[in-house]
Image 1: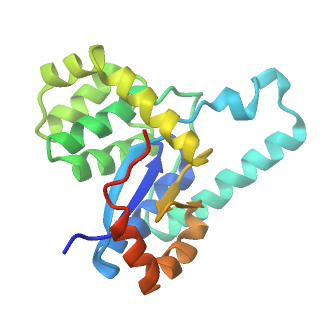
Image 2: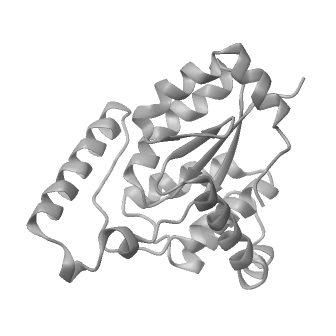
Length: 211
């Protein structure tokens, strides 16, 4: 019998996406769902504005957000160092898609998150992401051909489809067409999964994807 699908939009440069991973992966065992991971590459300037436009109020909020995320990280034994600059996560995002197709997604996913937040990986450096791909058993030449070929169009299509669903941040979970944004909404997601009628509806819509 097919499993109900929970789609998860994530971005390697999001601290809250990083600390949500453990609970999300656990759903596969505790609730028998299939997780479908997709990139939603945040365009920082679009929702935060330029550095010159940011107010003292904004920076207080940012400092608190990282402090809060670090609490979740510390509780899981994770290292979380503040980002050193603004990153374009395109290479790491399409690396996620490539890793899924070549059956080493979990190793890639965990490595990129862990090394980025430990300041051991530049996620906007193609050579660095290629090194992660090869360390997980992937082909450097095939990955680079993908990056320079269809990756951009596929990446942008996924972002467009996500925004058509209403996605605006990460982590966002989609179950039975309902959106749940943020790790603190995982309990709400679980409540939906545990309702038999939502399981039946999710299975009925399993193969209906946007676009």
